[in-house]
Image 1: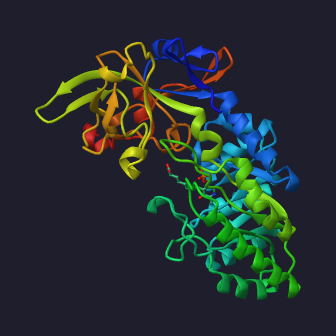
Image 2: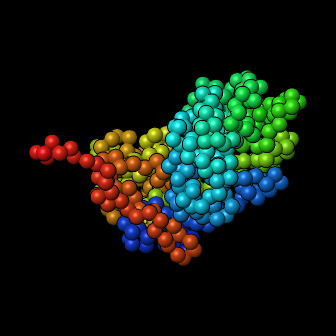
Image 3: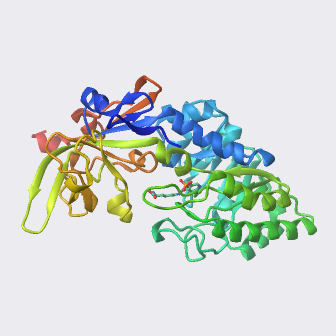
Length: 423
Ligand code: LLP
């Protein structure tokens, strides 16, 4: 259930009329529903309560401090992939022992900071990285926990750019090499290999790929146990799909029902790293129609948000539902097929193609739905566009959680060498 719905033909976020927010704060504007966010977290936690997992929300999905803080307050841990995300996690007071750190390319500086802070563990993606963490931990006189990220070689049946568990992907370590590393574990004096990690992809709508991957890894854990290699954690990653269009993703309960028996068999502490499942449907991108342009072949509705604000359609051909904030004139007969496009100088700058929408006019507001995950966090300043404002709605209250960038923000770190200004 999400908290965006029409009441008397006006789109509401919780108890606030979204059009009022658009008028007050301007557009493009991200609007988040606090209760949708924390309800999704609670839903997952509840579905898996038999194994009391540590749910580490995947910061990359949406890294706004207010959203992180809301989840951390509810007991979430955080899944990070960079020094910047570590900084954010600590800034919102996430206990270090609830932080897990993945990424195929962690730098020495990033590793050092995370080791010093004493995070729960690194998800290690290669042998050279393991050796590096061992070296850095030794230098700092620390013993660091790691989980080996296994590449289980399964097909996640999702978009090829967000599939991560095939052996041809850059992520994780194949089972045989992981086994060899575990046999040599004594060699890494400053490392404790305390778990295994998998993350097979994102926007996965069926449990079959999870079942395949987890079955494989649980079998592996059993084999290790027989050989006296004891582990403490099993991190099953994120990837749960949500509804953008007419997908029928597994619910948290159904997903849990399928995989709980396997998790219980593994007998380890369970970590999960959901991002999209928690944040995806808790945010929308609100935009305003600038122009309606008729061409001999098409009708373009040009809006004030662009691919710099939400890149998913341009990058993955992703579908996002688009709704008018005021559905007064929304009658099926009045609908027409249009392309909803942004102002950026690229033909890939679109939100929808050949989409049936009510006849739109200048000044109308639209909501791009399902924009809470990988929306703002993937936004950029391309075309020197200032990044959007973000607002959080809690029942009938509204909080600005990121101010719209100013032109000064755009040039903040730029320098003109003196010789160009005549010394
Ligand atoms: N854990 C790891 C190691 C990950 O790489 C990811 C996402 C997650 C957890 C969270 O996955 P989620 O539950 O959100 O599916 N930009 C793409 C999605 C990229 C996902 C990257 N990794 C999109 O907009 O669809």
